[in-house]
Each structure stands twice: as structure tokens, then as C-alpha cells.
Amino acid sequence: MGIRKIFISGVIQGSATDKSIFSQDYRIKIKSALSAKFPEAEIFDPFDGHENSIDYDDAKGKETFMHHIDHLKSSDLVIAYLPHASMGTSIEIWEAHINKIPVWTITPMSSNWVIRFCSRKIFRDIEDFAAFVNQLENFRIETEEDADVRI
View 1 (cartoon, one colour):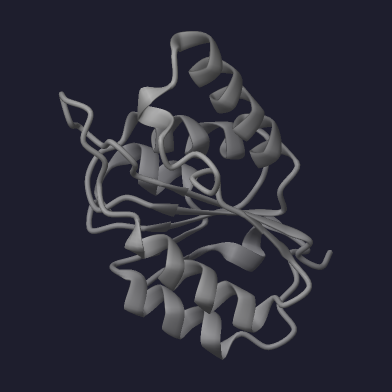
View 2: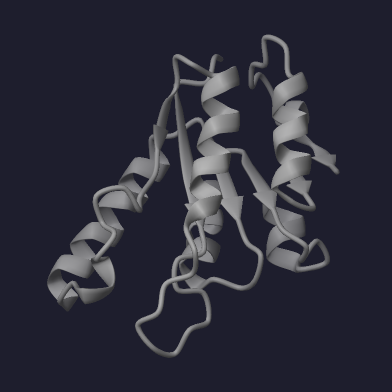
């Protein structure tokens, strides 16, 4: 199957105990690599349009989070960015895994069980991810084996 929709998952608050937000610059780099190779695919970024979500009340926050999970479930591929632990990203990885949606994870935490067992591809950093995506030719997801790689 061709890739129609890609969901970008990644740390927003991470392990912060206050209302701080981790730099979201990584999303631009990931989108750039993906849009160059998959120009027809919709790239869904749950942070777009929700830059102030940290200030949402509980009802709006829950509605937004669940809506994003629905988008994830209709995706063909999930790219997860985890420079450090993130509860939201872990949930998104798990939801993709149980719905048989391939997850490609960018992280230095390659020994983490959730990452090892629920990711089809693991990249050390965005540069390795971008280099891999750049060399893809006519990539299609036909079987689970199409995505099993550790870089």
C-alpha cells in the first residue's frame, strides 16, 4: 500500500513538572524529510493549531488528545520523536502498535522495551532518519518485514 497519511508523534512536555514545552523545531525537520519523499501523503502534526494546548481546560485537552488518537489510528505510518521519555508519545506508540500501524522512532533510548518492541525502525537522531528517508525509492508498506530495521 502506498503511504497516504503520516502521523508525527513527539515530545511536547516530556517530563516537565510545570507548563513548559520542549522545543518543537524537530517537527519542521521531520516534515521536510517526509514531504520530499512522500509529496502526496498527508502529514498530520498534532501540535499544529494547538500551540497553546498547555493552557486548555481538562475538557478541551481530553477532546483534543482523543481526536489526535483518532487521526493516528487512520494513519499508515507514525514517526515518533523521543529524545527523552514522554507519556503522550508512549501512548501514541502503543496505540499505533496495537492497531498494526508501523512506528519509526527517532531516539537515543534504543534499549527501552516500549521502543524496541513497538517500533519497526529505530534511528539514533533526526539526521539518520532524514538520510534513510532520502534514500527510499518507491517505498510501500506491504508486510511487517518491510519496516524492520535498526539504524
